[in-house]
Image (tube, rainbow, N blue to C red; front, side, top):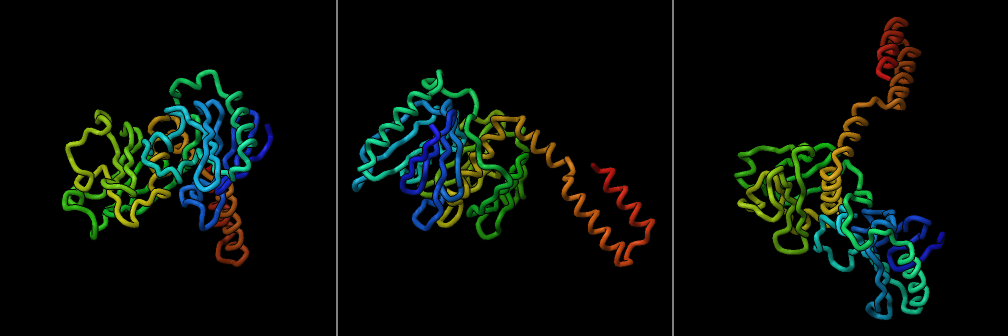
Length: 286
């Protein structure tokens, strides 16, 4: 298609095999959209498209993702406010005909399995490292493991007794996210053998969970985090790739270190032998 349809808070750029959603940055744009920046949605990730009148003289074009295609939508589990739905494009009502044209174009581009759940994630999750502050601790994710570090001001005695936690991705079977905008807001990790929604321990007592509160676990911080963890859990190869990349030396970083050694040598702080020896050690890491 190659066209761009601009609406409130976002613009959709149509390609031959996907639509690129670029979110605006501004005080009126939902913070979740600002955090996401942009998302490329393959047409094969979509089940359909809807066009309906919106509020106050607007029209809404909404792409409908296939179940299982987008980790962000999967982990949100219907808990997002309509205004924070990244698949909605709100336009002035006078652009109804243009929106209808693009709705038809998207329908024509849908994949042959649009009516079926996706077998794997087709939309990329936010990339780690990611972190956010919950009410009772700080959660961080480096791509290979989730870590919880408890706050003495909010964590329960059960969590203090258990100590700070680290959960490798390959020990997890899933993640649950309950919006901080409603009661029971929390992020909970599921270990192998745990069924979703079946818990014997409240989130504030579970060392595999962090709880949200006013100003803690905000949607634009905790939801991308949860989506990234879910994507890593569902795609073990992705976590392995992150581990391999972390283990692989950065050529640019080694070059910078050699230049620094050269500067020390030129300043007379390293002898010729010391410079040659340390340079050889760095080159051996490549």
